[in-house]
Amino acid sequence: MAERTRFIEGTWNCTSCDTRDILARHRSCPSCNNPREETGQESEFDFGDVDASTGKSLREGVTDEKALSAANAGADWFCDYCSASNRGDTPICRHCRAERSSTSRALFEGSEEPLEPQAPPPAPAQPGSRRWLYVGLGILAFFGTCMFWGSRTHGVTGQVTTTEWTRTVHRETFQRVSREGWRGELSTRAPRMPVSGSGEVAGVENIRGCFPRQRGTRQVADGTERVCTTKTRQEKCGTTEKCTRQKMANGYMKETCRDEPKYCGKSYQDCDTRTRYRSEPVFDVSCTYNTYVWQQVDTQVESGRDSSPRWPELRPGVHDRLRREEKYAVHIGYDDGGDKEHVHEPKSEAEFLSWKRGQSVPLQVNNFGSADIVAGDAVR
Ligand SMILES: [Zn+2]
Ligand SMILES: [Zn+2]
Image 1 (cartoon, rainbow, N blue to C red):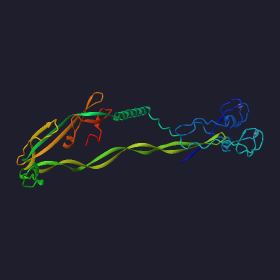
Image 2: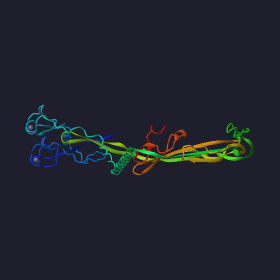
Image 3: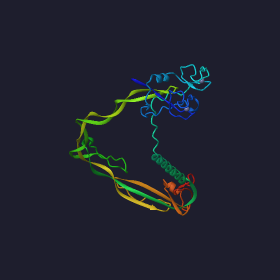
C-alpha cells in the first residue's frame, strides 16, 4: 500500500505582545522580535483541525525546501542562558551564541498519536430502556417484600367444629362389548370370567366386518424444489484513506496517509435444491371383534358427621367386583380478626378417628390468611 507523507506546519502565540497564530518557521515574533521559548505555552503548537473519519489534517502541507529542512531537523532545544528555541541540528544559540550544553532542555511533545482515528464512543445506553430496568427492579423488590411479609406467620389456637366422612362403593361388572382394531394386531383368544372379582381375561372373539380404512399418512419424495434466501456478505468496495500523525517537536507534524480497503455489505441469493415431499394416506384393515371390559353399573354413597364411618351396602353379582373410595374432612374454626375455618383432610380412617369434636388445635396462620396445623402436635 502506497504511503503519502506530508509535513503540517504548526502555529504559536507570542506571550510578550500577544500576537497569535505565528507560523512555526518564525523562531522570533514578527511583531516584537521576542524569541520563542518553552514557557507560556509558546512551544505548544496548534496544528489545526483534523478530519474525524480519515485522521487527515485539514491544513495544507508545506512543500518549500526550508520548511522541510526545519521539519526534519529534530527536536528543538532551549538555550540555558536566554531561553530561546533553536533547531535541533544547530549547536550554537542563534539568539545569544551560547553553546548547547548537556543540561539544555529539548522540546518534548509526547508520543505518536493513535494509528487509527478514534473509534466513535459507544452509544450511551438509551435512557428509556434503563428507566424500564429500574421500574422492573422496583416491581421485583415490591413483590419480594410482599412475599416475605405474606409468609410471616403467627400462632393461633383453633377448635375442631365438625368431622365429616364420605364413603363410596362402585359396583363393576365384566361385560361383553364390541370394539374395533387393526387386523394385524388381533388374534382370537378365549375370554375368562372373573371369580370373586379377579383372574379375568378380556379375550378376543368373533373377528368380523373387516374393511380397509386410513390408518395414517406418510411423507413421499415428490421431485425437487429450489429454495433461495437472501444473505449478506462483506465485499471490498474501493478504499478509504487512513492517516496517522506524529509531532516532530519542532513546530511541524508528520502525517502519513495510506489507502485501506473498504468493505460494504452486499446481498446475494443463497440457493439450495431440496427434495420436495407430499403427504400420502396409509391404509390398513380394520375389524370389529368382541371382548370383555369392566364397566361400572352401580354406585352407592354414604356420609355422616359422626365418628363411625360405614361402607354402603352393595352386594356383588357373580361376575362383579367392588371398588371403594373414602374421603374425610376435619373442620377447624379459629379467630384471626374474624371467624375463620381451616379444613384438614385425613388420609386414613385411623387418622380421622384421632380427631375429636371440640379438640384444641394449634395453627400457624400466615399474613395471606392461610392456616396450617402445627406439625408434630395434633397430626399423627
Ligand atoms: Zn511578540
Ligand atoms: Zn541563547
